[in-house]
Image 1 (cartoon, chains in turn green, blue):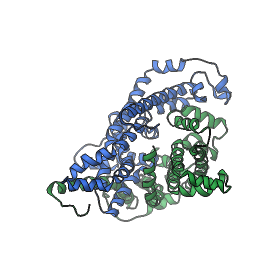
Image 2 (cartoon, chains in turn purple, green):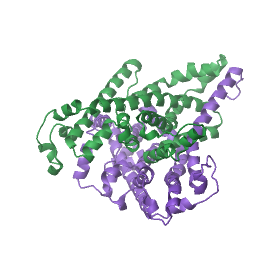
Image 3 (cartoon, chains in turn red, green):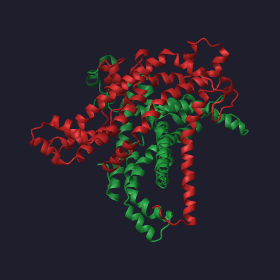
Image 4 (spheres, chains in turn orange, yellow):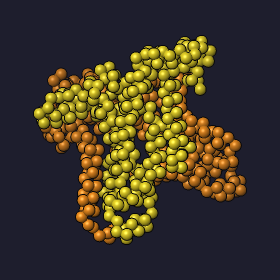
Length: 294
Length: 272
């Protein structure tokens, strides 16, 4: 493709393409730059409406206010706990579910696969799930953040497709050597489909990190609440909670509410900004897999 | 199946989990109550329209964007473009809604500041029903177009380089390569994704609606699932809202079923 002769039509085409892409990038990146800039500018400059792109009069007052707030760290720690433990359990159970469903020798394979797909499109709905979870005594327990989302049908299907793509001979050879299914799964199947598992780990981890709805339904205890519940109060419920615990006077308070919110947004998305680019390669591979196998 | 039983009887929380099976059977009472109420039509319309507009505006953009991205031959630049456009997908609903409400705030939001600069009055976007759908659809498209394009980028990358070469030797320009080679090659992927999206047509990103709406905008914003939540969890009408939720599931499933059959007939691609 590199040695193509260019003509006028192709030039115009290229200009259109690059303009389109440039607009898309600006639209996606600008809000974040703006938020970061507001959060580290001086409150006075923000109030006068001087911040459009770069920070004006660097000032970390708002940042300090937020960082000094204990509930932020409590909820951050909870989120890390839910994300790490939750994702680990997700991966274990997803593999355990997907592996048998991928083996042709499993006699219930077709029926269970249908039931799995069925749950994706047809569920009792919110209320029955809520009643079951609370009925099991999970209300206000950390388990409520882990058990209801233990496996996702869609992810099991992706994982199953990956197991199916492993050559049958590999399995047979291992079985001849005397390996049982657990050994085959752990020593052969899982290492072979690592890229897919990496993507699923990302999906699960992001879901746990971003989960606010389960927390809203099942967690009322502040000491167990995840980051998203905290953010919801600060960002959306016009809460003055953070402000009440600091010694700022009222005028300064109103001035920096907006900044406090933007600082919270920045703190919440930092982990995402750090981790996502690292898994870019796997993400593209894994999505390709999903596209082929549906 | 437990949830389905509940929709046909008179469940009370006091009877515990067993109560789901032992409560008094009332037949279609809850369904009749729902369809007889003023809510039914409004909820169905809102749920459908939010999804329909999201589909109309949200579906073509990732495809166009994927085509544009694959026209960038500098690998580093391409990677940068991809990562920066799909990052919003990984941001939580709470944060996205926080960004929306703060950007649209009438007093200090950047959108109204720009409007003021241009000589317009501030608009209180989130309390005006006519603005809810555009806000929902545009922000949704913003958040997902980069991520949704990955699958189409993968499909385009999968086209054999020999086909490009052959077309170039025949003297095709870029526009012709796109319309005659790229678009037909990714057609199966496009259809597959379309069906999967159709399957969720009655399943709006309900968390986002929940976080953005308020009584002032219920008229255009209230959807089946938010109504189920308010009725069931906030007002304890468990059986009634289970019935409404069941209705939603049935509609969903029917749509997927027919979309799948149609696609099998037309294109030989099907989800199952």
